[in-house]
Amino acid sequence: MKWRIYIAVIWCMMVLSSCSPPTQVVEPAEGPSEELSAIDSLMWRQPDIALAQLQRFVVSPEADSLDEFNGHYCQLLISELLYKNDWGQSNREELLQAVAYFDSLVREAPHPPLKGGAQRAGDSKKISNLTPNLVFLAARAHYINGAGYYEKDSVVNACAEYLKALEVMEEHFEEKERVGNMAKFMALTHGRLGEMFEEQLLAEPAIACYKQALSYCRREPTSKYGIPVLLYHLGIQYDIVDQKDSAAFYYDEALANMPDFDNLHYRDLMSNKAIFAFYNLDYSSDSVINILKHLVTLSADEEERTTRLLTLGHILFEDKQYDSSRVYLETVFEQQEDITSKMIAAERLSSIYQMEGDSIKAQKYASFLVGLTMSEIEKKTEASKENEMFKDYLAQKQKKQAVIEREKAVKRALLIIIPIAAVVALVVFIDAKRRNKKQLKEQQAEAKKLLEEKDKRHAEVLEAERQTHRMEQAAIAGRLKRSNQELRELKGQIKHLDDLAAKTEVAASFDEEPICRLIMERVNEGQFKAKIDCELYKSYALDKQQLLDLRVAADLHFSQLTLRLRKTYPKLTNIDIDYCCLYLLNLTHADVSALMQRAYNTVVERDSKIQKILGSEKPLPVILMDIAHNPSST
Image (cartoon, rainbow, N blue to C red; front, side, top):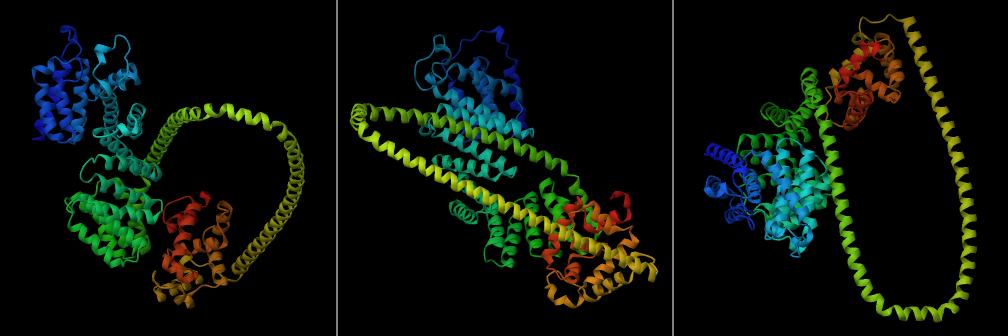
């Protein structure tokens, strides 16, 4: 059925575009065609039926006699009905012509004719009965043009067109005039902008747009799910900016306004509420996981199912149920086509396999993420452009509003000031002499006060400069003390290395060094777990001498590795160097936590810090072995 509709629409557009204006002179209509107006009215309620009526109209004799205005009006309706029926925009060139045409009419007929005032000479026949509908058509043309840009992945241009649609409406209609279909249009436009900003992770402009959309949607609902969906998205954005009370409020409001519970919006809402409860409320992880598993069973299709599995896998990962999480995330990575979903799954899977010591599979998912770096940068660039456009739109809107308010204030002020101006002037004149003497005394007192304050500020500045000097001297002394301490430690390490080289023979490999064998024996004996408090493994901890022996072994086998790391990456601390040496043995975070007697989360954070300093997203054992075996890289 759909392919027949599509072919019919294309054929209708070909009929319209084939009309040759020079062969038939058509007088301009007094206003919009009654048939097109009826289809337009029906479109806001039943777009599928409206599309069928438009198909019949464009093949009728009336379509052949459309004047210029109604020809462009018809093309606009074609684009809108294709969009509302989830079809691609196939009359792109005709739509762009319609956008330019309606803009030109709005420029030719500025505020007076659109507000019901007098028109310019020569315009009466052309736009006499178009009235405010003309401006509304121009705004709608920009909106549907933005939809066309978005279909072509031109997000910045789409954003510009949506903002232009709002500017046209706000420039020609006062707030109280935006009712009915106009209110619905404003809600849809603000909502679309909110969705675009949400996609680009711009929470603040998304919140502003969703609130505007909600205000208009309460005035004229866009659909039975319009209000709860906007409330739900506001909850998401407040959750992102860490305003938990507001997020909980909007989630609850969305649920309270949901008209029924057998729909995708309800399932999305319940999924987000479960995640919110997991992170912020006193809910057991088992209850949250059970809710998410139930939502998987309610999925309407395979695409929704993989989305639910991604959420479930993420929560299981956060709950440290890595085996279960891995099963769901691998299903998402293999079956989901959405790049964002695959990225999230790949990040979690890379971490899981890294913790399990499976560097090959960890590298597989890490490599996938590295390949998407450039596209993410491009998305951030587009997000920046969208944000700037939205800021410019708000600035212009505030500027126009300020002008209007200033004009109103001036009128109110004149009504008040003029009647009392004479009285005020008389009072000022009578009181002038008495005030002159008093004012002179006040000026003298003020001058004395200013002089005292100047002296006080001068003294404060001098004291601040002295304090700054003392702090600088103390800082210099502290840095010198630290440098001397580091130098002594370095000399001691070199001496220990020389003594060791003189007394013992170098082992066949790094792994065969006595200190390395000792560490691996402790790891094998302890079987360290991530969820266990590291204090329980205190007997396995390495002391300072053993850590120094490990550094010496690393320097012997890897061309003075620790010295090269210090020189190339001066931000690495002594403890960071110890961690790097441990990772040469391909230890897990749990092993390092036990041996260094540091909390598991602290080890993970330090791992991330060292990765950033080394400038790579690869697992640390991989990075360090590359550096160890390639002295030229440092």
